[in-house]
Image 1 (cartoon, helix red, strand yellow):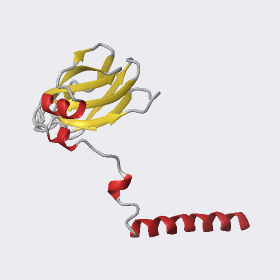
Image 2 (tube, one colour):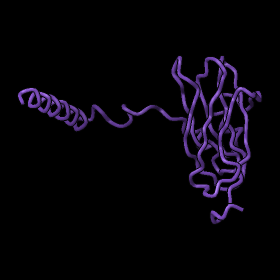
Image 3 (tube, one colour):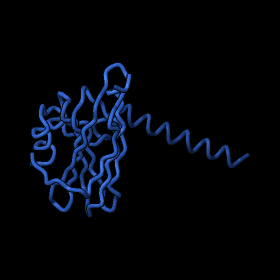
Image 4 (cartoon, rainbow, N blue to C red):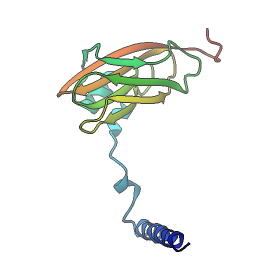
Length: 156
């Protein structure tokens, strides 16, 4: 019983300390959250987004990158996409949809020794290519897969 009370008091103290720090402005969302590449997400073409995000608009096509996405997506609002790679020393992975008004859907910076595997859901406005771009060893590689987005979810 005494152990539970101590655990409760420690938790209460920790929450109280964080609340005071947040109230004083020491833990604002800008300080806690990672920086995001705003210009890359506002790019209107795949090339613009890649140039802002990775510093180069081009990439070398590679079979070492695998995109798993449906051939036909019945709901463009939630298209499941998985990107993995067998390339060594992957530092960044970006997923783009060529048919979207703002093609960059997500971008990830990977820590050293991290397995290059991303699974997410993206939004696609209409049929187009899903493009996965991977930065490995200072070079940029990519591959793409066409996904057909149906209207009304009827599958055809």
